[in-house]
Image (cartoon, rainbow, N blue to C red):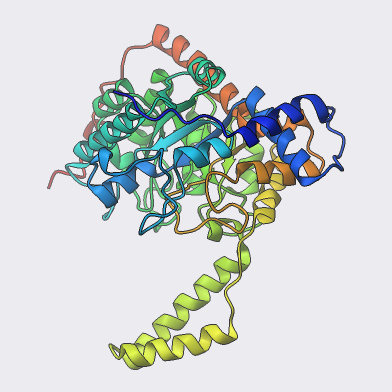
Length: 438
C-alpha cells in the first residue's frame, strides 16, 4: 500500500503562481528580488521537469537499515536522523524535482567485480522499487513519456540507473534481465577496472573497451538502456562514442578543464557530444567541482602518509601533527557558484543542448555550500538565471535535454530490434577468457 502523499507547501505554491504571472520569460537578465527569482524558477520547473541523473538513496537504505524500507520514513524528513540524509519527500518537493534516477549502485572492491554481484544488484533494484511503491509521491518511470506524464500528474517520476558494469557479471543475458526489471542506464565502470572496460580511477588496463565491452554497448543500444560514461576513463569514453548508435549520458560528472579530476570530462570528449547528441549531467561532488579542494585533499593525503611513515601507529602524534598542518592550511569550500562555472564550461564547449544535472546526493558526505541537500536545486537555477541563461536554456538544463536523449535511445532501440536479435556472445568468445574462471 502506498503512503504519505506530500502536498507542495503553500509558500511554494504561492511562489509558483507569482512566477507564472509576474516574471519575464524572454531570457533577459532578471533584477527582481530573491523571492521573485525563486518563484520564477519554481514556475519553470512546474512547466518542465527537473530531472536529476544520480541519487544514491537505495544504497543508503542498504547501509543504514539493511534494506528494511519501513525503518526510514521519507515523508517525515531525514535531516534530523543520527546520521542526516540529503533526501526526503518534503525537501524533494521544496527542490522542485520532477524526476530522479535512483542509483542501484553496488560496490566494487576488486578489479573485474566478483561472482554474486548480480544478486546484489537485484537486491538494490528490489529495494528501490519498494521505496517507490511505498509513497504516492513517487511513481516508477520507464520511458521519456512516462516522465512527462508522471510530472504532469504532480508526482516525482522515479527511474533506476545501475552504477558499475560489475552489476552484470560479464553476461549480456544479465544485462537484458536488469533492463526488464526497470534499469534504464548502466554506468560502464565504477572506481575499479572491469575485464572489458577501463575506469577513470584505476591503472590503464585494456585501453578503453575490449570487443566484449563493445558488445555491451551495442546490446544496451538495442535494449534502449542509456550508456552512462561517468566513472570511465577517457579512452573508454572515446571507444564508447565510436561504437554507440544512440546518445550517451554522463549521469554525474563535471568539466575536467576546470577541475582536473580523472572523473571529469575532457574538452575533447565534450566536443564529441555535439555529434552524438548526449548530455553531461553536472554533478555536485565537492572534489569534482573545486580544484582548490581537490588539491588540498591530495596535499592532506600526502601529509598523512608522511606522518604515518614517520610516526607509525602513534595515533596521538599523527593527529597532533596533522592538526598543526590543517591549522596553517585551511580547507577550501566548494560552492554553488563553482557548480555553475562547470555548467558554463560545458555549455561553452559542447553547447546548451548537452547540459543536465546529476547531484549525487546521499552518495557524498556533504554537498557544496549552497547545495547542501535536494531542496536547493532552485538556488542553482537562480544563479544561472542571473548569469543570463534564458528560460528556454534553464528548461533544457533541468530536463529537456535528458528527455531528448532518452527519446533518441528509444528510437535507436526500436530500429535495432527490427534489425537484429539479442546478442548471445559470451565474454570468453569475444575476449578469449572469462575473468571468473581460473
